[in-house]
Image 1 (cartoon, helix red, strand yellow):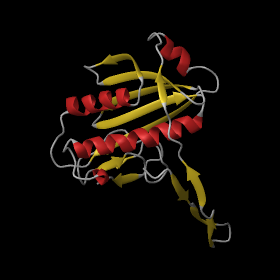
Image 2 (image 1 turned 60 degrees about the horizontal axis):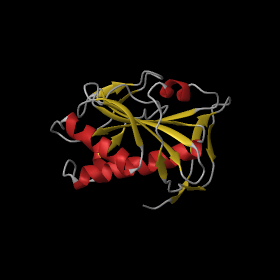
Image 3 (image 1 turned 180 degrees about the vertical axis):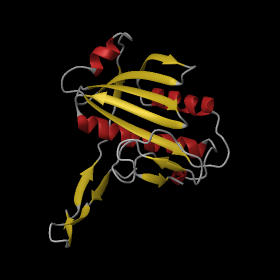
Length: 198
């Protein structure tokens, strides 16, 4: 995995004189650190306490699989469960019926805790993570989602990683409420922008 890359933003807007203006940030290099987790045993009652502490940050990665046939959620759930174990998380609890997994770990170098949740809901695969360290969250989500896509390819569920689509609004970046069928339009619940995902 390439852990370095450039990010560049370009914003177009109309000023008060009806002139179109462009702001270009120029490229900025980003580096995603490889993380090494150690399992940490915590009671399930600790999840709420950890999630609600001051300064906690939360990120979510919501994805859909763009293929014509239905993928059984049990297969995806098993892949998520195996990936959390491969990343050395400790299982806190799981709800097989609702398709939710809760895992906990500590990053071995910086000694920061991370709560990670995997769930399948509304035809979406979601990874939710919480930690006091937002760099840890970015690195974890990048690493985990890349590994998830690779496992889907290896298991023959998809032919390429491009078949896994991010379910974020193209207008405002909010997480979309469900994964639509092919060519189905979906409206963002935050900004009301209507879009087609695939």
